[in-house]
Amino acid sequence: MTELSALDPLVQRAARVLVTDHLQVGAGENLLITTDPRTDADLATVLFNAAEAAGAKPLVARIPQLPLQGKLADRHLPNPLRSAMAESDCWIDLTFPYIAGSDAHDAALKAGRVRCLVAGGMDTTALAHLYAGAPLDAIYELQSAFDQLVADAEGKSCRMTDVLGSDVEFTMGKPTGRKPRRATKPGVSYSLPGSVVMYPDLESVRGRIVIVGAMHDWYGALERPLTLEVDGRIRRVLDSGPDVQLLDRALRRAGGGEYGHVIHFSYGLHPSARYRGNCFVEDIRVVGASAIGFGRPWWEPGGGENHPDGLVLRQNLWIDGLQVLENGLVIAPEPLAAAAQRALAAAAPT
Image 1: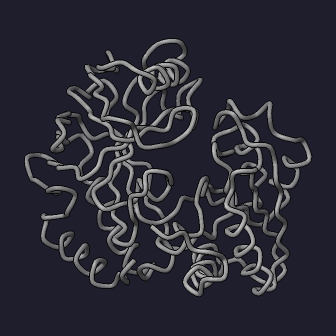
Image 2 (image 1 turned 90 degrees about the vertical axis):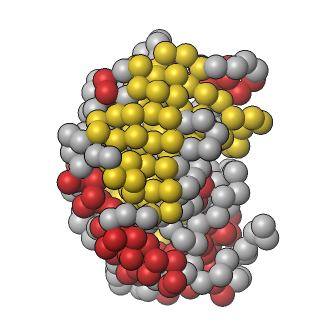
């Protein structure tokens, strides 16, 4: 797939949508953009330009690439950056591994001024797909409807399968809230449009999960799919090889020395997202994808964003016996399927 540059009109339009529509960055606001040596330089430039054109005061901060994300990143963050994070009105984090989930990130939010968009690892192609590929109103109509389905499913039995052999059952846990159409509230961390997170009751997860991509020390497609066996906790990773060694190390790091739980499932629903195998934030938003988090949940000591994720594509999903997804596509209930069709119809070819 051809990578798009900052000069591409689609990329420039997407940058305006992200900055002035989704984030509502206004004249006079201070916008911080954090990057590392592997950040797409064109992306930082086009976002800077969009903010400047809106009358904002953008600042690009480049730090060394973090070895790990979340709370494990804290000791690697420059102190001046901590001040900039807390004193900005808006902050777009493009670093990958990302700063979100660190104590520094939490302190910046608690200061009550900054609103943060976690966009770690995004590039100009993902920007164009996620912010110019389909109208945000259509994406958020579908996302809101799926959020409501998940909220109504609390305590109900669920099952997720795929053609590679994933077959896992769980009880839907308590939802954490919906993603708003516009990211305007200070002190809040926001994510990119196009996915819904599902939290299971941790001890209820049982079965097999076959992943085709993983974020462990970094993110990438796997040489071949790997299978995880889960019975309340993750019990073992089948197969052997370099990918297994990396995943095993990441699982034990996130679980405090042992394998932890399945923290979350998700549903990717963005009709313009494309699987490329190298851009985590876009790959997990491909229609039918599920980003499955492993380790300790963020609400427990030692949890947070320092957990590995596995990627499943084209999932089937049943909630309380009703099949909602078939090969990744929404088939029921009818109002949700209709919203998915409207989002697909509104999407431009990519």
